[in-house]
Image 1: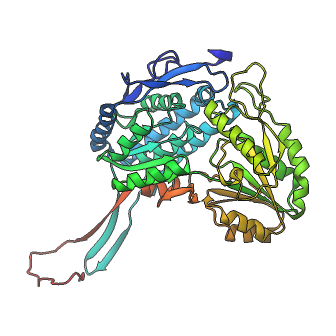
Image 2: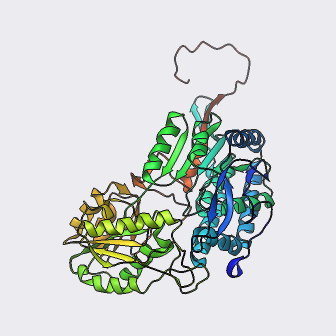
Image 3: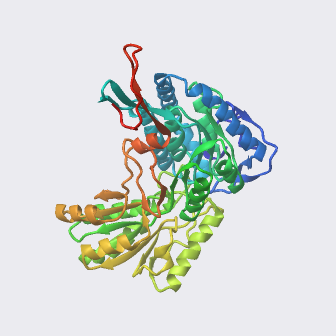
Length: 510
């Protein structure tokens, strides 16, 4: 293993062999063809990931369906105890998971640790799902008649997760689903599938029954198999807007519940009264962190009034950041996930120049000593960007920050609201009045005030708006508990004797 990396070479994840599927509580080999998984910094082949056959996907779903019949009858406190045991193992192995994650995503170790921790927080929240799945009771809705509701699991759920968070996003999904009494089939990204397999290994060690969570690897064909499978009741998805729309429509056409978290173009509005150092530092971190491969990354800065004069300082701060390998303590971020992703970003940079934007800082020619094959992009900053330019309209998903200048807060709000995405937005200001006006008028689901990336903790929900979300109930928090459960309403009356009663010819309770 390169550079002191330690990763368990067992039946779950051998870097020298084809990755395995996780079906009915064990790792099983697949004869299906697949693709190579490579280290984004070195292009070293880490493993081959198989694209599960139609019969293997069906086997996973059928196994989850069979497990559901037993798991739904498991007392709620026992389900919670499994989550407690699982979060303890995740905490114990946090660094191990993070190091493996670094190899297949290109992230820095600090960033990877943070990702794993955010996933652990959702598992901790799942430990309390019992209290969130309590029904309601009203006594005497009519004479001697009571009505109460029961919150029950819905069955087999599926999750389709992205490359940029191979630990966190799966942990947003299956822990809450199984804590609510469901079983789950996970189709992780084929670009970094080793980490999800590691999560399954630890779930099994925590005492999960066979079939509780299954993992099938693959691409679009395997996703469609899950979307079309009659025994899958609900689908959770995180990915780009075009794919999210397709997932949402296909799942809905197949009569499934669906929550599809989609793309973004997140803005950070800088008022002239903001703390300059904090605003610039936050912009740099939010734009370049994780190589810009976050759906909550700040990719558009709106400089209001005299804040436009801070552009040279912003350039200097971004120029001081450099990418590097996962174990380079001085690196601000890592490599792009693939060479194709890097080329896509390079194309956007050239297109921005051609469309008339001012490239203040160009990271196109970035290299990292010792890693000539890495998918590197240096920090890139554009000024004089208008909404009609592709670098503003599209989600670049790289360490590229575009800036626009406006005169007033109203202008900034109008610019943000005109954007078709509504995932996240932030404002930096010293004015409570400006912050109050902004949070009230801006049409975005997650708002930060002097906080660059306003991702809520798990007891809230991840509430993207507009083209950043398709569905009704959002990920994690109380909304996710409702997404993974159904409500059964019971109206009951008990008779004291066998006396005769006059027939009730109406629907009125009496």
